[in-house]
Image (cartoon, rainbow, N blue to C red):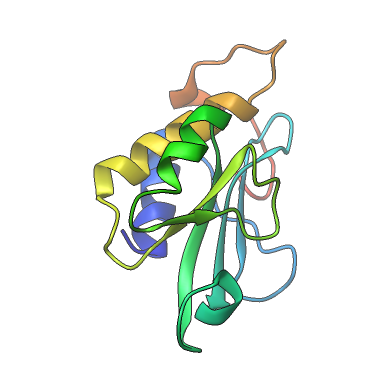
Length: 135
């Protein structure tokens, strides 16, 4: 999946738009009601991720179950979370090494792990009543 495809899918699935807090190409995916991040898409140099080369690559950081994080890091396309808690977050390379369905599943898990505990909203209309700029 490309960043554009992810942005389109999260808009359809959760009603959220990417937020660009650093005024660059790095985008945050956040809940409308609590502003918590459920995803972060960045362009990072390969060598900063422990990979060979200096090419810029797109990555996705998502929150996940710590036991799943450990298993995922042993598979191609997954790395310890870049600039995030490495026990609860995982970096996914958006280079085609991870299937679209697996990326969608991981985003869904992250979305549900980061939503408000006291506001159980239906995910399809999570932002329907919001007038927030990035919803």
